[in-house]
Amino acid sequence: MPPAFPERAAWGTASSLRAWQQQALEAYFGSDGSRPGPRDFLTVATPGAGKTTFALRLARELLDRRIVAAITVICPTEHLKRQWAESAARVGIRIDPEFQNAQGRVGKDFHGIAVTYATVAARPALHRNRTEARKTLVIFDEVHHAGDGLSWGDAVREAFEPAARRLSLSGTPFRTDINPIPFVQYEEGPDGIRRSRADYTYGYGPALADGVVRPVIFLAYAGEMRWRTRAGDEITATLGEPLTQDQTSQAWRAALDPKGDWIKQVIAAADRRLTELRRAIPDAAGLVIATDHEAARAYAKMLRAVTGQGATVVLSDDPTASKKIKQFSDTDDRWMVAVRMVSEGVDIPRLAVGVYATSTSTPLFFAQAIGRFVRARKRGETASVFLPSVPTLMGHAAEMETERDHVLDRPVREDGLDDDLLAEANRERDNPDVGEELPFETVEASATFDRVLYDGGEFGMQAQPGSAEEEEFLGIPGLLEPEQVTALLRKHQAQQVAAERKRKTGDPRADRTAAEDLHTLRKELQGLVGAWNHRTGQPHGVIHNELRRTCGGPPIAQASAEDIRKRIAKIREWAARRRS
Image (cartoon, rainbow, N blue to C red; front, side):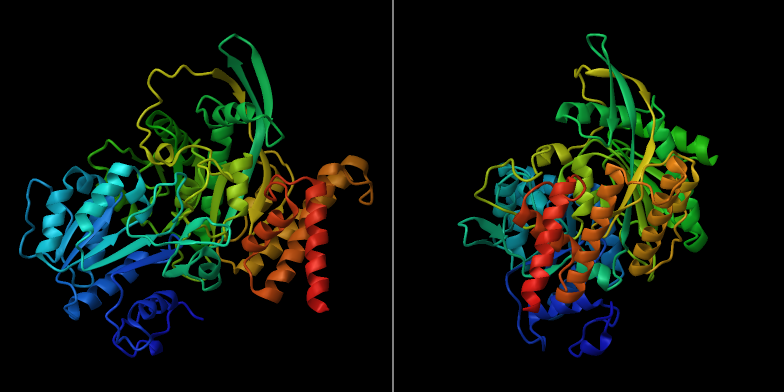
């Protein structure tokens, strides 16, 4: 189904709607548009798919039918209020993004207001009075924030219980905690566990197939880290190799430390990748997501040293942050560095290269961050995200296509959702934690190109920064169909493996190393998953997830050779059973 199909818009929808947006409208109003629509409706669509466009088209229809007379948009951040107002203005809906609780009333020239969840929580009774005064459509942008605390959830319920219509939107409808999200329906499954129920879902896999979002190439970097503990001991560990949780955390922190070379080498590699993309996408831009303000400023200095140009730095306590984001969106500048401001919802379609230089590892934050790079403007665009070879992140990258629901009635710490509490993932990291004594001092940190993760598969072997092997992967053209990306990655990997064998022994038929065996097994599994995808239509990530559930073991990024052999045997068993 193509991204837009205006011939299906017989009852008045805009001709520019994408297929999923039209389908979601039909789910709301009925195929012929005759139904008035439900009071509550939850739309889950992958970041970059166009949730704002769908919501405003629905709002326009409800206003025109006089089902509602006013609009209230609830956003996670101040910047998003202005972004909603600008988008609404383009379809003739006037939204006031500067409304403050002290005003009480909105100007007569506006159809409604855009406010943050925090603003509502401060005076829920005020917003309840406004909602009762006029038939109101309330749009909850990234509705999972309504459950950021019991007090916020209670405030949202109090304020908007009288609403005529409520539209909830989310690209990542799962939470680390088990607080129920207001106005979201939950259904009990056969296992007795309640899960959120979306009225319409449009996942990353279908969006990728439709060309609505870009495929994401993850470039993972390992390397040797050395740090000094408070006791004065020096510890050395290699990022990307099996480590304890504490060792991984400290090695990761050393990698991101501006004093070391790891982050400098990765930023330089990311800039070379951006240069390649700009051959096909002239205004392509990059974003470095930093942990705190101090690191953000240091990374900006590195970018100036690498590119000779300044980078736009966006900090959460900067009153001009929204203006800076808007200016960056409208230019062809190369790089932006930010802490938290652009991790969710902010629309900068030209972002195509990312550096995940933050220690936040929750699935929610990761999905939101990657969502900044996936918005497609034309067919064939790809996105590239550079990240540390940390098991948690590699697992998230390998499961990009997996769709999650918000689960109640479960332990809080479950299945990788226990990295940090959601509040920790979402709180603004303005500065390094005050009063927290650093557990170590970085002595040395150097980067090594590790591998590429793409479409559930892994490609490449370790190579030094600046080497011909690394450049093969950095130089992948910026405009390719997803199948062409896979074919090119396989070609580069085969060349790299053959060259490595020849270099070590002079004999390309020499015995394989354990690492090469693992790569071969992963490649074989990926080929079988691809064949099963073509046979069943299931996304690659869903197939990998089911294999993991059935066979046990960690995500593919951390699976051992034995784990992968079990999954190969299982998928062959599925294929044999289906043939019979």
